[in-house]
Length: 314
Image: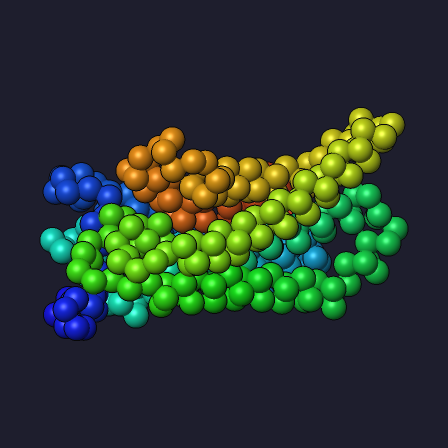
């Protein structure tokens, strides 16, 4: 039952997710493609986590952050992908009112946590390149744990604001969400209550996360660039820059799509374009991160070869 009577207005108890397309053939194609992407995402990120755990040479700050980034990437993808896959197989995909709120807050938690983790990783690269003699002190195990906890606390605060604003919205009749998951923007369009306060809270929360983390990343890489340009050795410059390329690529991919969704004026693109970019941000990027780090990082590739050699010899 999708509605309960509340006075003269029916209160929504579930939502219908319209998904990406109505074309039955295209739905089958998308199901196969996105299922393969999800399997690669989970396998790739779990492999990264396990490789870091079992490889002693990867037991330092950079890879400690990377293991948590891989965990968050699994979380981002898992918050929306299983439900989206179900959507391709059924004619009408419904999600309960509470389930919608949980999905929205889960996506907000993992998205914000990834922002803070990318900022922490930028700070780690800054310390490694600009202050190498103090690196072991400044990036001790205690500091790394504090940065990780701070990232998750930031994610919890962001998710709490989304959850609070979701439950402040009233839905009086229309329950068809024009998206493949419970995103805040299409839910606001369905609300029959005043959304001005909720919109301000969400904008402040998401905007604060983005601005703080972008500032940390920008400042860190500004100092890194200055330090690299001051190096006299070409080999030293190349080595210093090579330690940043994987992280910088991940930052560009993640923030590029986030900027398109949350910063660009809504009038400049359609809801269908927003869906495509959301799929890239929440489904494709989590798959690409382990590939980026494994292909561009010599230590990861070396550790992988050593572990494979041990398995083959045993």
